Image 1 (tube, rainbow, N blue to C red):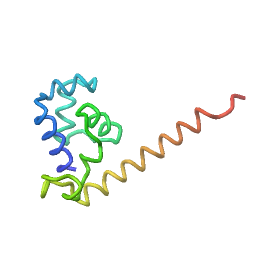
Image 2 (tube, rainbow, N blue to C red; image 1 turned 45 degrees about the vertical axis):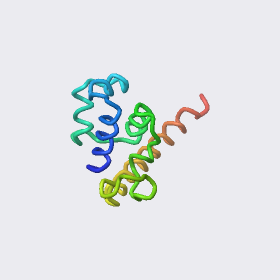
Image 3 (cartoon, rainbow, N blue to C red; image 1 turned 30 degrees about the vertical axis):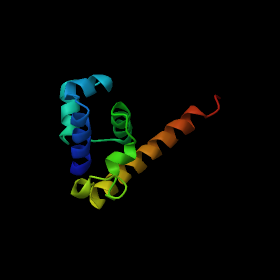
Amino acid sequence: MRKILEKIRHERQARGLSQENLADTLHLTQASYCRLENGQTELSLAKLVAIARALAINPWELLSVDPCLQPGLGQDAASPEDLLRLIGHLEEEVGMLRSQLAKATEPIA
């Protein structure tokens, strides 16, 4: 996960954005965003997508492990362990979303 967070920081800084700038865009406090970027707060799929949108990049660019898919990353790419951990979180979120959708579409008795 550290590599993903490093990429987020790199992309933010490359765009000349402060943590406060990006936090405002994401409707977070600067302190909350700082904890997220430093790995003290869980990075969910929703947060990853929101950050990628705020940075105007594809979320996959933050996850790429193949340097050929994103030139210039080299050893900064996310490790397979990071990706497996994120996939686990994504599967949990998909399950929660499916449950919420099922409840929302239940017929009213």
